[in-house]
Amino acid sequence: MNLEAEEKKYRLRSPKSFELFERAKQVMAGGVSHNLRYHYPYPLHIAKAKGSRFLDVDGNEYVDFWMGHYLQILGHTPEPVISAIANQVEAGLQWGIVHKLQIELAELVQQLIPSAQKVRFCCSGTEAVIYARRLARAYTGRHKFLKMEGSWHGAGTHSATIDNPGLSNSRQGGSCHDAVQNTLMSRFNDTQMVVDQIRRNANTLAAVMIEPILGEGGFIPADKRFLEVIREETRKIGALLIFDEIITGFRVGLGGAQEFYDVMPDITTLGKILGGGMPIGAITGRADILELCSPTTDLPKEKRTLIGGGTFSCAPLSMVAGLAMLNYLQKNAAEIYPALNKTGNWVRAEIERIFTLFGIPVKCTGFGSLFMTHFPKGSLQEVKDSRALQMDCDIEKREKELRLRLLNKGVYVMHGGGALSMAHTHEDLRSFLEKIKEVAEEMADIHLVKPIPSSLESIFSGAL
Ligand SMILES: Cc1ncc(COP(=O)(O)O)c(C=O)c1O
Image 1 (cartoon, rainbow, N blue to C red):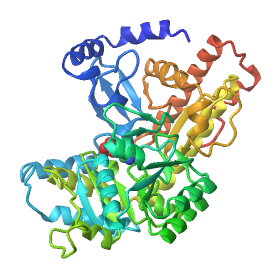
Image 2 (image 1 turned 90 degrees about the vertical axis):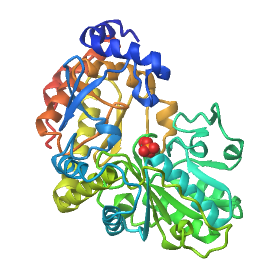
Image 3 (image 1 turned 30 degrees about the vertical axis):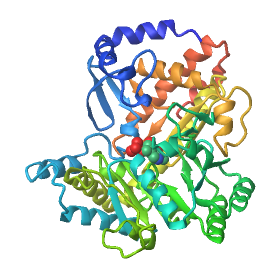
């Protein structure tokens, strides 16, 4: 892959980002505080964002599909959230004392998420998962967890010990022996495998933890029956079912993926959209499980479970931002979710079609407003799990070539895609697809694939 010309272009348009990156490396390992934010040859540094777009420090404008780790469902700096934060600032940034706003946000979660009987807030999705696992261990008195290949449940030691999106099963530095021993893996959407694992570990399994729509592993929806079987089997053996809805909560619909599938987990973890752009995490679910962390419980000591919450839990700015976001989504749900889902279907189909017209095989996976682009090395059948995406696709082509080419055209993607927001206009999307067409043309040229001239004018024929 010869990207010299593209790299040169990138360097020419982003000298200030380069300078900042050189400076950042002197104070931060690798110049970042989240590895995903590094990209080749150096990350561009953002200056400000509004709606579907942001400006970098060199003054270049980008249409953004990363949308703050998929959370900005209304676009960057949405008015309802910004005014709610502005109104709160004078009253206090962090009190560390209980207040009415936290009750209001918990009530809204209880109202919107079908399985939410009780709620506890913390400061990130990672924390929510750590606490959900701890609750499951305390409630069941067991230690094993079953998770899916390709899943990402945050950076807590137990979740990240087996680093899964790369299917590496690698034990990374600082990994925890106990987590390696107590983590079982199943292929996503492989009902037989999951049933075998659950039954074989019937006495030791604390919970199955699953993203009902696989996130980092490829935005792959579960088959409804797969989730139903997991629900039935976990119930039979007294293990819990934990849905990680940190991406899907309030994105695929107001009630998250559990409402869409009509499968009720025992515990749900939430984050991202819930905070309206401010830091947040939440654990919600069955009251008898959540009550284990109550300071006034009279349960025996070995059942009482510490959920730290943290110094910043229920920080008023996160609560007001979350309230503004969820209230807006609730009020406008009838318009928002059908529009996002329809646009998502259109964008995915067009990306596949455009690349195919230029002789480049592409699979664009996703669900609703989420999408991810893959370059299969051979033929790729229907994608049901992350294995084929990891093993049989050219990851470098996506992460380096597609990304760099799109950056040079003013488009910011993550894994060749991202999340659509209500701020992305029809014009933004048409111009994005126009740029996809330019990239496909360049790649066809470089990789010596012949375009099919007679079909080119049919690009964008798909109606939105
Ligand atoms: C499904 C899922 N679970 C957990 C997390 C961790 O959340 P956070 O980054 O807020 O710690 C993420 C973050 O991307 C996620 O996508």
